[in-house]
Amino acid sequence: MLPFFTFFALIITYIVYNVFNKKKNKIQCSSKKTENILSQNNKKVPLSVNYHFTRKCNYECGFCFHTAKTSYLAPIEDAKSGLRKLADEGMKKINFAGGEPFLYPKYLEELLRYCKQVLKVESASIVSNGSKIKYEFLQRNKDYIDILAISCDSFDESVNKKIGRGTGKHVEKLSDISRWCREFGIKFKLNTVVNAYNKSEDMNENILKIAPFRWKCFQVLILENENGGEGTLRDAREFVVTDQEFEEFIQRHSKQKCLVPEPNNLMKNSYLILDEYLRFLNCTNNEKTPSESILDVPVEKALMQAGWDQEAFIGRSGIYDWSKQPSNICGNNQAKELEW
Ligand code: SF4
Image (cartoon, rainbow, N blue to C red; front, top):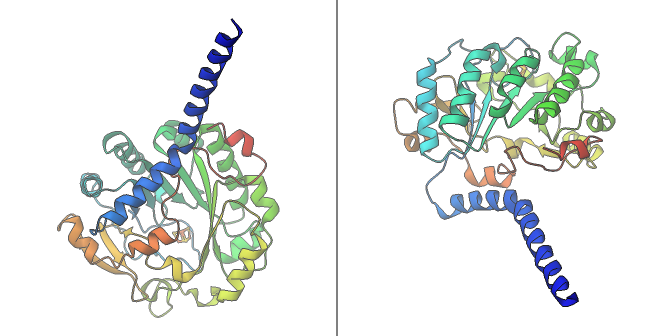
């Protein structure tokens, strides 16, 4: 009898072990698979696209590098048609950005649902300043949002005001949103632009409190025809930090597991940016030069004009666990978040 039970126990242990490990490795395998698609294929694949469907914004950040040069919003059917073309060419992640995407909540909601329900993209995310986000929006759309990224450059409101991020309630709203994201199983991300006003700040304690799953820290970037100061809506020159100042900020926060630093050299050509007319923006000449619109030419042709560096995209860890799965999380809420 005893050998039978031992044998039975071994079989059960084997099955449980394998099921657990398969689940654990699924995310890593999926991103490895995606990297393989890119490296085996000489053709560029628009795997992760940042669609800045509006340039309008209710904030006035002094260093903004996607300014309100137009107020154009593509008809929703054009936006969907462009997204469909991108998905047909291999897009797996779509990020909606602006300007401020929540200035058009209905439009945003329709595109999120279209991408997740119809196009079946792996990941849909949004970058927002947070000020217009409502609890009900997240509650209604929780199944269609994998990641919500909020921009915050300081936990000191006087610094946020100097930068142009809001009128003094930015941190309070940030904390509400991080809580709502936890409630709805949406991954909460934080974006910080390291600049002359926040370069000396120690954010460690606050990062632990709000517990983002990913904290991107960008070095403030000058693009001639956006924030270069000569005939542009913004002049970011007073915000510039040196490479060393940026590095000091990163070192100060190096214990944060979720920290992802992005100095200028990593940032410039590694993002695939689609503007409000569904044109890729080429940043190789230190300004944003538009390609032809993907509404008019094949995606492949527009991609050739995008100046996008696919290697740099992979190099800056552009492929990561971007759908709703557990991952490295900063802060005290880790155990709770791992329940996602
Ligand atoms: S919130 Fe973003 S889009 Fe709006 S002004 Fe600031 S940097 Fe620009």
